[in-house]
Length: 116
Image 1 (tube, rainbow, N blue to C red):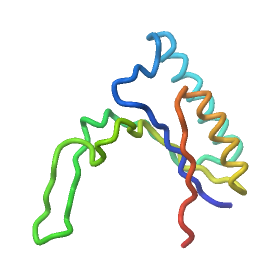
Image 2: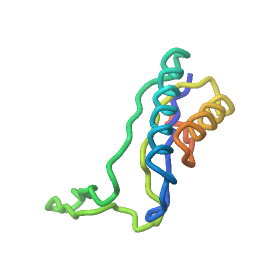
Image 3: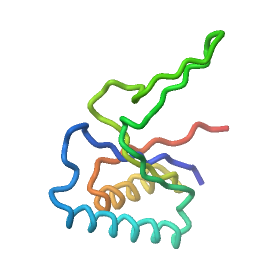
Image 4: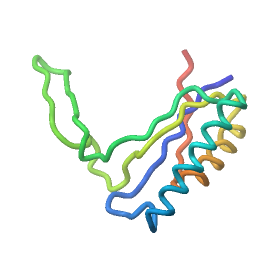
């Protein structure tokens, strides 16, 4: 089976949830989806992330390591969480992503891991 990264994207400044109730329901739906992934044998790992403002970028390419506060990307779209799943093919991974997108109420990008 191939492993896929399913990353959840949000637009900075956009309210992801219309209300506290909707947010709590999305969390419950995502938890149920995570449990389904585990029961189906697709689960590898998943996690939600703190806001991009909490990020630190590390650049160790030169003679000294340089760190800067904030996200690396200056784009409006930022990753909010992710799943690593195993699926037999891209179509199966896309079907998982559709379920995950519905559960978390976010856009989900699917990318296979590079072959080793």
